[in-house]
Image (cartoon, helix red, strand yellow):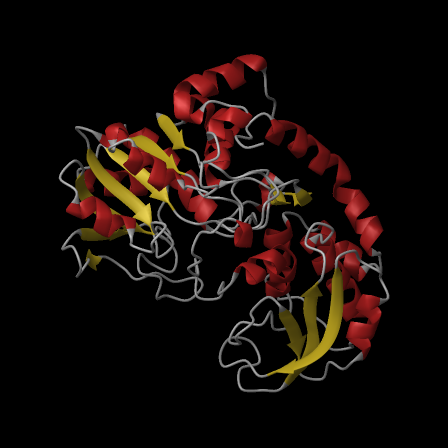
Length: 415
């Protein structure tokens, strides 16, 4: 991946004035200090960007206004917009499906609009869905959580590829990165391990918004095969601000992402999906607790002994209602983040993997080596098995992360 000055200028032209690169692209802060999403800015401009086009929207329950109305309901009721279709991602348009599932196709009972299922579709198959829906422009508005393996960013990527094949335009309505986005962290995916939890070489905690990632996708990975792209940025948001500082309402982007605190831990503790321990699914605090039957207080003691910044590990017990270890009392750890600025979720996740293997004889990886897909290579698994420590494992991804960070810098929209 390389980024030239010509690539930056070409990209800025492709997204237009509202999506031009640089700090000013996010727009000046509002007089009331409020953060305004890309949808709010689109609406304030009278939906001029969508004038004369048949529009389809890729969204889920997070596609909401500042007063928690859904944008599909708002757009459908506005005669200035010709909204003809809705496209649902993993978990579905209304967000009822668990991980690895979708709601299927049908009609939205609130608006009567046809709802198409995008989950599991990419390339020409997804392009055919856009063609069948009769849209000219695909609008994307979903709240991301800042981790490479959260699938909505790859839904965006797949939609961009498919839109180019079907000769449709793409408009991304941006939203803040809820965990700040000051820097990227963790290993960069190796293409040999590409899947729906990581299509391209992106850092595990990418530190970008969906709009910025769309620009990077077009500029680095899709290049001449990308769609006509327009990003409508957030205004009033500064890189490094956490979701609680935005004043925006939070709706869970997926069933196991109930709060912004969940998102803060997710980039590290989701790695436990690749193990035989529970990552807290089926509890009220998924990804904030991790454990299994037979784990005792030694794990929390060992994790605290690492001295990782910004987080304490508290011994805990929980009983998942579903998923791994359902109905069984699990011992484990609860993450207590006391300094969000210093906290590195990826290092915390690696630290928990390292110490779990050391103190619990029952530790094991999933037989399908799902951890390799999540981590982006087999390096985390093999190094943990070899007894490596957190810093040794982090050193192994440092060069790749530095390269990604340099490329990422050219696509950032917010100061």
